[in-house]
Image (cartoon, rainbow, N blue to C red):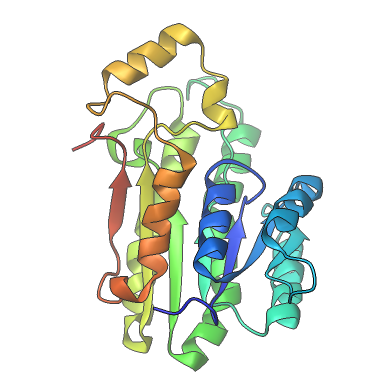
Length: 248
């Protein structure tokens, strides 16, 4: 397929999986809107993608997905710059871990708002244009723990499991307009979040992964790129596992 006329919007693009997705989609030829709260990192990322004396291929936008007004403003700017959005990658996410018995309501609300409700708001922003053009790709980044559970992460697991349900429901709503909605469920990936894991816990995690290593952001990005491509036109409502065999 030709990616030259494709516009992708990636949330949580300043680091980790989101950054890898933005770079890979741009490498394929798509123009990308990279959005997160850290504008400095986004500008650095856009600098890697954009070439001197060539049209803008990456647009960095400050975005706080916990605020609906920030989401609307970012998508409006993206459409003003590029005219449309063909691919949405809902990647932004946070964790506020703790045992459910002691979990504060604020920790619950923050995670659900950022990981799940924000995806709903972002989908609402792109759907009108996708429906008019009768094409589009929506890819939600969920997690292996949404499928297998994880103690101490009731809020995170609930939000990521909710993304799977959202994916399947919206896929049925928009399939007649040739819009596909899928999810990618990463296992444990080398990110800033997993860097904080102590060595003993890390070794236990590795013992549960048949492929014997943590994943890389690029492993997930390749799955996202496939689901965003024409080759995946007959796949919708699917959860693609990228977990090294951790959950089978």
